[in-house]
Image (cartoon, rainbow, N blue to C red):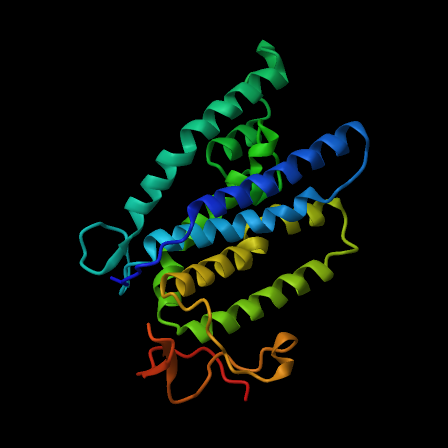
Amino acid sequence: MINSDKEVDGKALDGLRGLISIHVMAHHYFQRFTFINIQGQLEMNMFYILSGFCLTLGYGKTLWKGTSWLKGLQGFFPALAFYRNRAARIVPMFYLSNLLGYYLSYGFVPDQLFYPSKKVLHTTTLTSAWFVEAPYNEISWTVTTLTGFYIIFPWILPTLQTLSSPQLSTLNVWLFYIQCANFVTNLDSDKYNLGTLYVHPTNKAAVFVMGMAAGIIRVRQDDGIDIECNVLHSLFPWSITLKKEEKVKRGKNGKAESTSPSFSLLYLL
């Protein structure tokens, strides 16, 4: 268990969610009634980051040895219990809103009941975004994107916890450039590929993992770490670790403390 005597201000995060939600709602309004695009879709990255961040604040306080499907294995993340908790939280309202969306879309027309079948299947399994398709409640597509993130969360968290805070910080720089490359290479793509870029879980997983990494750093209270890289680090992250022979952890007194190495990804210099 990681001791954390300084909790994150949840009200601040709720306020941030509220601000970006207003932007998204305004985006849909202007796009529908004025045909002005204020780029509300860009805020989805913030939602994904916050999702990874907040999940890690809760589950990242325990140092996990690995992941297990079954609950009760000491020190291992219980994946099935996590999936059950996530489903209980999001599935009922998702189904209710899409059921209403279905009947509003098809107007109780008997010959169109459960049509089209693929859309019913994708909506029911919360995988619409995986096929770049909107569910019956179109604005609930983000839930189907998050479903992909929830699937990988239990398996990624224990590995990320083996990295030091400087490693996690540098990893986030790499993930940022992966997202940039993904976006730039799809600028001239057709509408389908652009949809894939924005909604498919595989294209946004890096953003979610960035939130997880930031959450681990916050749980450790290492917000003020200095990764001590050269001035070009903001453009080119030269290394995943500060030193090859050790990782550095900041103690409560603010001084760096050396600990034994646990995991290394890559050395560029």
